Structures are given as structure tokens and as C-alpha cells.
Image 1 (cartoon, rainbow, N blue to C red):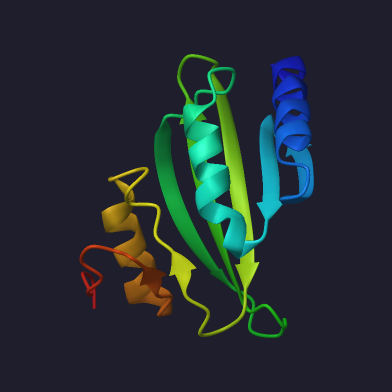
Image 2: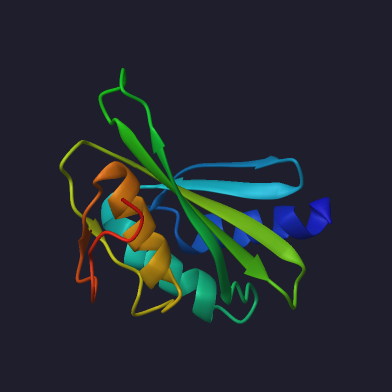
Length: 135
């Protein structure tokens, strides 16, 4: 499994070298950190690349680091059933920065982005129905 993750890491770093800020394999999962402006292109690549096949969005989690300059992070967890791989995609951004919605790539992101908006106030550009659902 680790060898498979290493191959995935190499492919992503070779194809998206200018977009990957950091990549590390921990706990049998690959974590890729990218800039917020590259989110749509990277997510589309992960889903559509025939060697990767990350075709399921498992979750989107928000993280708040109040003492850091880039206060918020979003962690996207993707699964490739065919390759039996998981990948975590991380973006860090400043307060009040609007993040691109990935609902056109993964419609299931609709609810997850609404949840993040409700809990953290993070706004998503081009979201079809960004309104509170929990509070």
C-alpha cells in the first residue's frame, strides 16, 4: 500500500509540481497541501486522471488556527475505490477569503460546504445554495 501511495505522490508532484506546496505520507494516507487558488484544477485532476481515480469525496473539514496568519484550513478527503487509496488535500487561507466551491466537480460537496460555512463562516464562491443548516 505504501508503494502505491508513493507512486500516487510522484504522479501528482510531476503533473502538478507548480501547485503542490507540500506532500507527505502519514498513517497510510497521502497529504497534499496546495494554494486555495489552485483548488478547482487540482480536484478536477484527482478525479479525472485515469491513473488516480479519486472519484469519491468523503468529507470536507474546517480547521481554525486563531493565532496563525492564515487562520483557516480546509481538509478535503478523497477515496479511490479502484486503487484503494485515500488522499487528503489541504488548503490554508486568511480570514474573509472566499474559497471556490467544488460542487460542480463533486455534487456531494454541497452539504459539506454548507456545514463548513455554518460552523466557521467560510464562504464558497459559486455555491448553488450557501445557507445555514445547523445553527
